[in-house]
Image 1 (cartoon, helix red, strand yellow):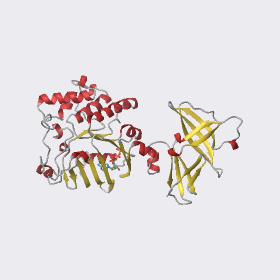
Image 2 (tube, helix red, strand yellow):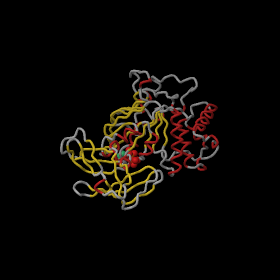
Image 3 (cartoon, protein in one colour):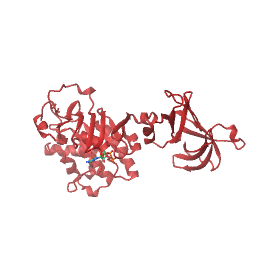
Image 4 (cartoon, helix red, strand yellow):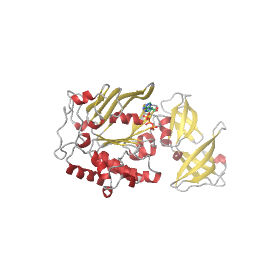
Length: 404
Ligand SMILES: Nc1ncnc2c1ncn2[C@@H]1O[C@H](COP(=O)(O)OP(=O)(O)OP(=O)(O)O)[C@@H](O)[C@H]1O
């Protein structure tokens, strides 16, 4: 890391601290304050329109392995952005580059519009105005909860430090544990202390790397719910790395989906779920039934109904992805023969999964080939094995993509 650059630019262009801040704690910046720019001569734009954090055209290699390929992401003040994708897709690398824990090779990183890293030049992590939370929380075992949180505020006068640390602990509901040591806390409580420690200096940007993965399922749900509200109240721009698509949908204002170091899709959870750009994006956010077909007069035929295939050439080979909830089922009357009911399916098994029922279906296409499909119905819907149901396809939850 080029400390010469950061030393040389130390203080240059740093906005004056707010009177209630005095110093900027561990990060050296006030609430939503910006770090000193790498280039003091860079133009100074009003902060309103600027992203709190932006990574621009970032490419990164580990030896010959390309971990990131031309990835650009920006986060608005107060926005929560989740990075998701399969293991090894580059999520943590992107977060570590934003934090300054990895040296930037190609591209640029800016906070509040100020360039803080470009190839050969980099502000060190402690001067970026960011708060970090890692998977293992990294609390100091020999320090109390209060001292762990005060640790990041060592540039404040001692009296202010305690007040600020207690305020951060109150934000996460951990003030009663100020004198406890980390080993006496549950995983969820340690996570909350780690969040308080990251937020205590009131950074403009929070970076969380798999913050809930150490918690068991039930605890994880409640802790991430609390965390969402704490993060929103803090007003910080937040980047969260998670491998769990449901977690990303729960937390994020926007999701960044990565695959093999490349950006696949960026958008709201609703956009990624309902308008996936490809088969990978469609299947990443939930189970899909996959069928193959061919475009005929602008549509593609499936055993459960036909779908529009706009902007595709006649005869194009396609993949049809159908979410289980897109298959609406209805019981057929006993006297109805197979021929009289459109899109008839045979029930192979049905299971109550709590809030929904999963029905395994067997359907036959026009060529007489049989396919196994999953349908998901709300509530309690358990048709008998071997019985027949009619299937209606909800086209908004089915996607057609060209096959290579
Ligand atoms: N220090 C390193 N040295 C060599 N290769 C690395 C290093 N760190 C990461 N990689 C490789 O770079 C790629 C991206 O890794 P990264 O940790 O960013 O992915 P990830 O999406 O966070 O994965 P996971 O969800 O498994 O944590 C992977 O192929 C990984 O093996």
